[in-house]
Each structure stands twice: as C-alpha cells, then as structure tokens.
Image (cartoon, rainbow, N blue to C red; front, top):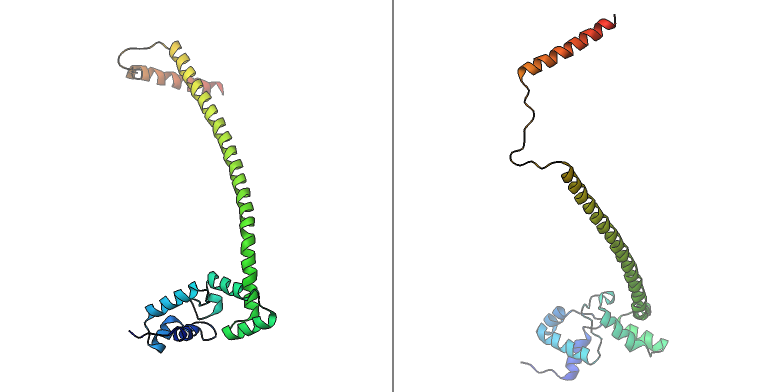
Length: 197
C-alpha cells in the first residue's frame, strides 16, 4: 500500500474542490487510488473544516451543510478577498450571497413555522370541540328517541291483550261469501248506471 504525504493528500483533495470539481470516481481512476481511500480522506478533511462537496459537478447541487461551510468561511472576508476566494473555488459571489440569505432565512423559519403550527393546533381544537358538542347533542336526541319508542311499545302492549299460542292467519273467506260480495257490487254498479238515465 503506497504512503502519501499530507501535502500529496491535500493536492489530491483540492482536485475535488472547485474549480476542478472532480468526482471521487474520476479522481480514483486518474490518480490510481481506491474510492474508499478517497472517501476516507474527504471525510477527514471535512472534519478539519475543509469544503469538499459531495456532488462536485455543480455548486448549486451541493448539500446545505457544504453551502453553510462556505458561508461561514467567507463571512469575515472583504469584498476583494471574497472575489479571490470565488475565483479559486469556481464560485460566484452572487451564489454565496444567495446561500447566506437562505441560511439567515432558515433561522427565521422556525419562528414562523411555530406560529403557524400554533394557529393550526388552535383551529383543530376548536373544530374538535364543535364536533364533540354536536356528538353530545346527537347522543342526547338518540337517547330521547329510544325512550319514546320504548314508551310507545309499552303503552301499545298495555292496550292490546296478549294472546297465547299460534298467531291467527288472515280471515277465511268461502266461495259463497265471495260470490255474494260480487253480486252486491254488480247490483250497485247496475243501479248506479240506471239512475244516470
């Protein structure tokens, strides 16, 4: 296993940073170093505060942590120093300003989000109380209806005598009764017809 000097490691790691912006895979094939070794070197360099983006292709695709590191690193710089830093790292001052504004806005968001959360919770409590009141009203109405139904069944049961045994079927009508009934209807229709004359 070859041994690399700290200066050699630093030179290789600088190829991951802008303006070169080589990916770990590209750098591994170019330098003949395993990707695992390069990932370990990058992790150690980040631990020391170096800005080495995960996605080296384009600065706008960097993670929030990487952008935040650059904002922290450039915060105390003068305009001339910032311009020099941007030239060295292949960045634009406008990008760093946008990232700085996003970082500052991120601190304002929790307060605004907390306020919106409190308002939403208050509205939800109000809705739940309204639904509970409506539920209590409906339960009370249902209980009253059940009580009235029970009383009406009870009073009907007191008025109708209870029968024991088999329920009686429909009344039996004989054919003679039916014929007599039909004769009466026919006579009624005929007499009605004769009266209209």
